[in-house]
Length: 356
Ligand code: ATP
Image (cartoon, rainbow, N blue to C red; front, side):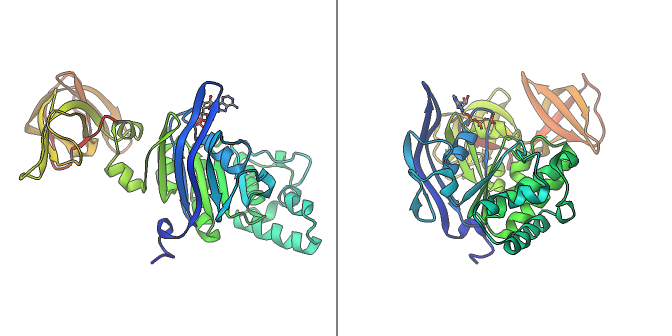
């Protein structure tokens, strides 16, 4: 069903070979990107990996050194920002301090000479959409950070862009407000049915909001997939490490596939059996990934020594050492630091990933 799965609807934006240099530095390196209609796509990656630069090229604030962007079937080359069917919400709310909430949201419409009646109706709709209908007469300094950012979103959607770009829109807010606004943004995106392209370096936020997560490093796209796929099958050790979901142990493939349909990797903690993995052969360097939830205490397991125990509210995060490798796992009761315990790794759940 095309309507219910945004990642399978038509293509809204398509970029090919997008490249941007600043002096000798390549900020964005030959990026190919397809953004489906109605989908929530998020760029996730470490600081400086080029996320914002991609957004700015889509918005038209930066000119690519190479490559093309096609939106709604039309090349954006040479189209100035204000003529693109795109709007941007920035990290800093950037509201006009001398205009009321109403004035801020109406601003782009008044430039376009809509009638007053039309403007009032559309401002009301936009403010309703972000739950700010009661605040039209206030000035920005009379609002909380979260309220200001809602107004910024209302201002960005009033012209009914086909694509809304959001550059770390919630990062200046405290954790609780961020959680609220994440839910509101996701809900708004579904209701409006417009595509969002979002930038964050917070993986929880990316996973919570997105249909598609695009993981970047050093100007390149490393993996592009649904959140669950990225979590279950990180494309390489960078992704596995960045999403912070597993202990990573370097090793060498001992065997892979064949009649057993499984793989084995030789590591500092011994030879570990895992599900087979595509494209790696005996002797290849690779990385064993073990998630905390797939490790448990068991007498017949690896002999480890407890190093750290951290209280996490409902359970304890425990770090145990075996042959210089730190394994993390969750425990209901805290083992004593320094104690020797056996740890069993769920062998069907440990997995092998590429180095890069
Ligand atoms: P962050 O999460 O910190 O915002 P980012 O992934 O959005 O990072 P960009 O802002 O796109 O990264 O920057 C990519 C690289 O390009 C960085 O190394 C940055 O220093 C560089 N860069 C960005 N804008 C400029 C500029 N106007 N002049 C020179 N270098 C720039």
